[in-house]
Amino acid sequence: DTEVTQTPKHLVMGMTNKKSLKCEQHMGHRAMYWYKQKAKKPPELMFVYSYEKLSINESVPSRFSPECPNSSLLNLHLHALQPEDSALYLCASSPPRKTGRDTEAFFGQGTRLTVV
Amino acid sequence: DQQVKQNSPSLSVQEGRISILNCDYTNSMFDYFLWYKKYPAEGPTFLISISSIKDKNEDGRFTVFLNKSAKHLSLHIVPSQPGDSAVYFCAASAGTDKLIFGTGTRLQVFP
Image 1 (cartoon, chains in turn purple, cyan):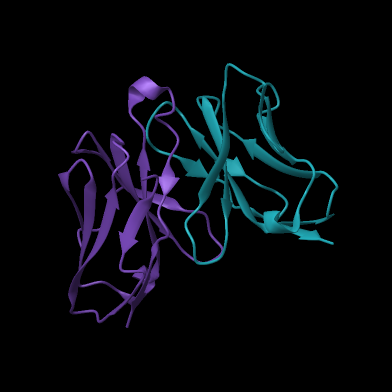
Image 2: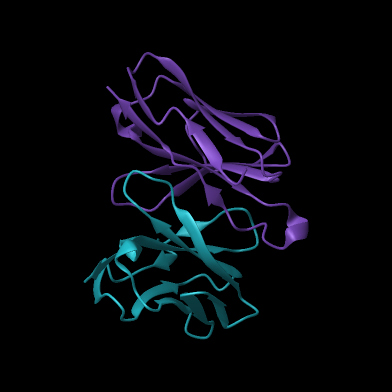
């Protein structure tokens, strides 16, 4: 299994809804990430979990809440989002440090989120 | 402040020719560089990387060159194929898990 799998692929939610994005990898990777990408812009880092601990939070608003239940799963809980939060949300993972390739992030297909 | 820049938003190349995509950076602490390819509505796909201790890395049709003194890297694709048409992002890391992405270059390979 060499994939990072994200569900759902598309999500439309209202500003009062609570929803969750899910990400899964079974490659034994040690780090998992959430990135946000707006149209015609580069991906921007939101959160990093390294060995299941939150290691980087890029000052993301609290309406986005990450969770790493185990080394294979990463969730992003959404609550009270704004229309400007509509974007492609990308999950990624990186191999263990011992591989020497621990900086390389492998991305999932993304969840296209629309907030109405 | 854009630490990683791709000054060419688009590039058009004939099939079979070389595609050269450029990337400049400002942070001298960056020590690892990556190139990603992205199709619309999909996640970026990792292509090739290079550590700052090297000046060249090659993988099949893809070669990345790093010029640390100029803070410049480039991706060469030889020969270019129509399936290479996509947006290409360079990214850099300063020894942490945070990747800084460039603004992207849209490559179109025509027959």
